[in-house]
Image 1 (cartoon, rainbow, N blue to C red):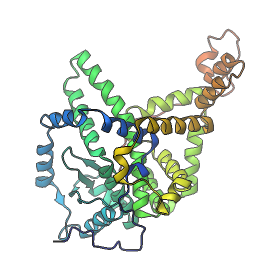
Image 2 (image 1 turned 180 degrees about the vertical axis):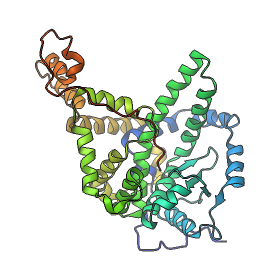
Image 3 (image 1 turned 45 degrees about the vertical axis):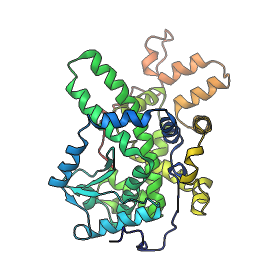
Image 4 (image 1 turned 60 degrees about the horizontal axis):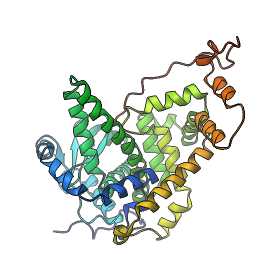
Length: 367
């Protein structure tokens, strides 16, 4: 029986033979993964953990209570899955399941072998090209080896709830969960890039993200206006808003949708993306020679550039501190406005008014 790699995608798309996940991984995601893969005994530790994790139970659960995608069931999804694996040159096509859930979501989990799960809510929300980008997103997770760490995160999150009554135990677990969530959010940016490499349709990727934020009403939405929201989110407000942004994102598994859209558009317009499309990208055969030091250096360079170009008030302050700007104390007091105005002794009233009321930052369930 064919493994699906002989099937040509439904429209002509560039294929990337032997592509390494390093080609599309976000710098922070990439450096973390390279470092983990280089650790002596790391694989042994995770294999030992696999005996404690309910992975076998999870596989049986999806097999018994979801619909497995195949040529006989959800055939169009099966074609998309094989196309995505063909384009990214993933040798073994992972099993995919459709799960009855009105919340639009998709995930790639598993320690020994990745499993892809999509919800009925997502299928009903997205059109074919938008869905193709999501399938590519999940195949990107599989190629990067993200499913292992994501499964560990799911297990630890569940464990944290069970041991919440043990103060120190819960604190220790939540510290790990918080760190994994930060990596998890960066891994989503990597997988968005993989989805674009598979779908090769930036507008479809943008539409899919807009629908995750605003639902079916695509005729009421506009990509340019949606991206302007991301600019307003990054640049708007004062230092209070910068702090609230950090607090709002901490409990989330995914970055905010407008941020994902803006990040993906920037990457699609970059020289790195064009080089991949032209066939110039790192190969898996070179992964063993990857330098941890070089990877961390690339990540540090990326963040230095991000901080320098950011319009966020807190990032601007960091840049000014690095540049030795004067009267930083005054800038901080003005930046925090109403939080510091009452106790400043100056008697001045903040010009920007009281702090606005923000949401609770609860985690949204998104692909």
